[in-house]
Amino acid sequence: MAAGLITSLLFAGRHNHNRMPRILLIDDDEHLAAPLASYFARFDCVLESAQRPSEGLAKLRAHAYDAAILDVMLPEMDGFALCREIRKESDIPIVMLTARGDVMDRVVGLELGADDYLPKPFEPRELVARVQTILRRQRAVPAAAPAQRRVFEGLSIDLDRREVLRQGERVELTGTEFELLALLADPPGKVWSRDDILNRLRGHEAELYTRAVDIVVSRLRKKLEPLDCIKTLRNAGYMLAVGKSDP
Image 1 (cartoon, rainbow, N blue to C red):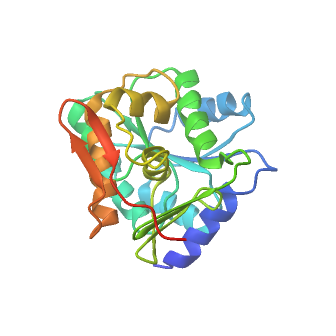
Image 2 (cartoon, rainbow, N blue to C red):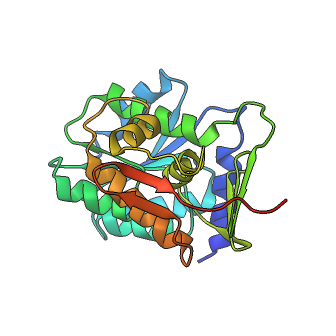
């Protein structure tokens, strides 16, 4: 697979702030795409669709999208397998649609790198709100400040470029993972409760549960290995325990 090609295309799409956001829906329900596309258009978003995972992957590789919406129940491969395939090549924001709203569906999706989830049936306005929230986080440009780069021992966080270096090597993070790390780093040593993290990262109340934070923290820890810098404080929350780098 042309990993570099798809990543560059997706990055190019998301960083172009002068056009309408372009979203790809991968769902085999042929009656869902058209009304959703019309609804998204009301909020200045272009929603395109694919009914099969193979078609969706081909579109992701050929065009620049700002986010993807994946149904769990799909032909060829389920939404979890599709999410895994996309994450091999890209950090594009992903919203999973789960048929039952089952907690395990949500847990698995988040563990695989999804940014959000929404149980079916859903209100179109809520789906738009979820996507808009993710895009705002992804496109957020930090306000002018003395330092837009956090540098610690073995870890560097560039807030402008949304780039993380671990011992000098770039780490590919999803939008949610990056936002979590940036939050923990401002300032390092501060303890953030799960509820505080959920409220800061989600931006709106929508069936949140603390297990989601644990899953994203686990993903982030794995990507930052061999650094062991995210600490769990029992009954309190999480903190970034890392020393400041010498100038």
